[in-house]
Each structure stands twice: as C-alpha cells, then as structure tokens.
Image 1 (spheres, rainbow, N blue to C red):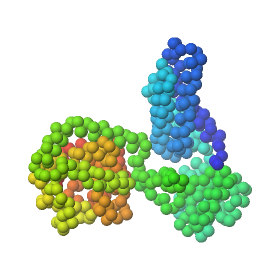
Image 2: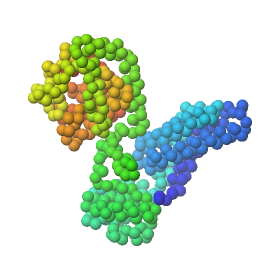
Image 3: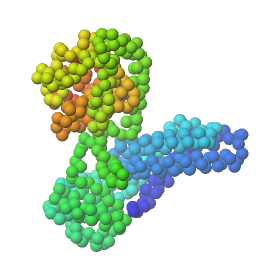
Amino acid sequence: MLRPHPVRLVSLLIDHLCVALALVAGGLWSGWSNHSIAAERLAVIVTHLSFGFMWVLASNRLGLYQVPLLRNRRQALRVLAETWLITWGVAGLSCSIALHPPGLQLWLVLAAGLVAMAGVRLLLARSALGEGSGQRRTLVLGAGPNAHALSADEAAGKQVQLIGFVPFTGESADYMPHLEQVGTIDQLPRLLHQLNPRLVLACPSDEAPSREVSDLFRTCDRLGIAIQYFPSFLQVHHMQVGMTWNHDRIGLALRTHYNRSISRLAKRSMDFLGASIGLLLLLPVFLACALAVKLTSRGPVFYRQTRVGENGEHFTCLKFRTMRTGTDVDREKLRAASIQDGPAFKIPNDPRITSVGRLLRKFSLDELPQLLNVLIGDMSLVGPRPPIPSEVEQYSWWQRRRIMVKPGLTCVWQVWGRNRVSFKRWVEMDIYYIDNWSLWMDLKLIAHTFRVVLRGTGM
C-alpha cells in the first residue's frame, strides 16, 4: 500500500477548490427561486460531491498527479484536460438529468474549470506542488545502461532525492559512478529499513535474475514503499505503454502514440461523421454502381472478404464486386504476373476483372461500401489499407506494426505511393503515418485522396 504524501493531498484540495469555483462560475447557486432552501442546498451539495467524486476517480485512473508539469508540460496539461473532460461529462450529465439545476451552464463550467486548473498549475509549476509528489527519497535498484540513463539525467535530481543504488546479482557497479553503492541485493530488507526511501526505482539490466526482481516487489509491498519499474526490454520509443488485465493476470499494453483517449475519440468522431455524410452525399453514385454490377455480370453486388484489422482482429471488408464469381481461386496462379513485390498482390490487366469492375477500380469506386465498415468501427477514414490474413502471415516483425492501428480507406501510400513503390516502402509510409499521426494529417490526406481518385490511377 502506497504512503500518502501531503503535497499530493494539498494538490488534490486545490483542484477541488477549482472544481467548486467552476461550478459557482457556471451558475450552480443561481435560479433556485422556485425551490425551498433545503432542496436548493441539498442539490448544490450533491452536485459538488458528484464532481469531486468523479474528479478523484478520473485523476487516479489517468495518473494526473504522477506527471510533473516542469518535466513534461504538454503531457501534464493534456492529462489535466482529459481528467476534467471526463469529470465534467459524467458528473455534469448525471446532475443535469437527476437534479435539473436551473441556473447551471455546463459549457461555462467546462471552460472555467479548465482555465482555473491550468492557471493554478502554471503559477505553481516551480513549487513542490508543480512537481506532483515532491522530492522523494529515492533508491535505485539496478546497475546498467537503463539505471544510468534514469539516474544520471540532470532532471532526475530535480524530481527526486537520489540516496544511492544497489546492483542486482551479475551487474557491474561501474555503470553508476555518479551514485554511491549503499549495499548488496541480499541486504535489501535491512537497507530499506535503514535508509527509509519513499520510492524505489527498479531498473534491472538484462543480466539481473528475474527472481531477485520479484523478491524486490514483494519486499517493497510489505514495507509500503512505492515502486517504479523500468525494465530494459521496454525501450520502445515509438510506442505507448499502459497496464492491461486478462481475467486476474496483469500485463503491459503497448500501443502507438496516437492511441490516446481524447485523440482516439476525436478520430472516431470524425470517422463516424465523415462516413455518415459520405454515404448520404454519394448515395446516387452508390446505387448506380450497385445497379451496374448487378446488370453486367452474374453474382452478388457486394464482395465480402476477410481482412486483418486493428491488433490483428479479423473483420469482413465490403467492396463492390469487380471480378467474375469464383475467380478467387486463380489468385496464386497469377502470382508471377504481380507487379507488387512482397506479400501484396497487384497485376495490370487482370483477366478476372469485369468491364464494369475495371471502371470501378480505376476511380476507386469499388471501395465505396467500406464507408459502412468505417461507420460500424471496423475501419477508419484514414489508416493503413487492410491486408488479407495470408499476406500478414508473411510479414516480418517490423512490418506487423502496420496492423496495430485501425485500417483505413485512404493513407499515405494511397495518395503518394499507389503502385509505384515497393512493398517495403509501402509499409514505411504506413509506419510514418502511425508515428506522426494528427487530425490535421488526416484532413490533408482526405483532401489529397479526392485529387488522386479523379486522376483514375487505381487498378
């Protein structure tokens, strides 16, 4: 169990005062003339308690007080905004439905809360409150490149008070000339009692026995000492690491940087809105394509194919049928004629394609039904194109990163690559998109897609 810290308690108290200020600014105390004083006070108290309770839950869940503003201002303010949005959304909606505060303006509460909390944090950034939980006495467990990088950094001394290090068995103390070795790993329980650290940074190298790391966790837990674990195998700079659970087993969830709650919500909102508008505006084109497919060849209007989506999940991808029915089996026979290297498959003048299908492919009209996939959440408007399972089986380890995000209707390759680049370059384009994603990039890619479609470069 973690020890409470007065700095964190003071920070929480200040945030609760900001929440109260936001509710007052939003008009919680006004407009109650038709209610009894007792009913008014009860509603005000319940509203305050609801916002305060949700703030505690959301801040603990998102780790708000673990992000020092001086160390990472952008991340600290982002987590603050997410915490307040969740608090405001859940508590505000609940109170509006249950209590109907007559003078409460929720949008004003949202703005006032953000301004108050961000303002207070910026004003107190260089105080102990700005550092979250203050300078805690900290013991480093481990001696290797990872432990050195964490403890030798100039910013580390500003956030914590480093009192020494203890190497694991098999590790060399030569990596840690900037810190004093206070003992050996077999003396750990006695050292923790003597030195009384409030935080242990566990930084085992590849040589550290896993048994000693497990014993460290149990010892610190028994003594109520906080632990931060930095294993050497988690040097994944292009990914975001979080906790996950499978039944009662805990693990690490690795996601790409853009997979953040607010960003993900914004992208999903844009997908839903864009797909809905697209289906409405393109309905005449949609019906014309369906009629053309049905009247010119035997078989269904839609072609359903299993594709690989986010995190390797399979889904049914929809397209207008552009080939004669039953010609899928000829795919491997035509593999030698493919102009695309790697596991992808593209051939010019494919004999399986119908005359209408060739026209649909030329202007990418065959992919219009995938707006339905976007609408239900299997795909996004922008993202790596969804591969088929047999292609994914041939991916190398680094190429599998492209299936860690939701596939899309268009992407960097669709706009600037198409059939002119190698498969390796294709995947590199997808990974560039994943690592540099922004809503602005999505909007630019969507705009460029219209230009590419009108040029008719599809196959």
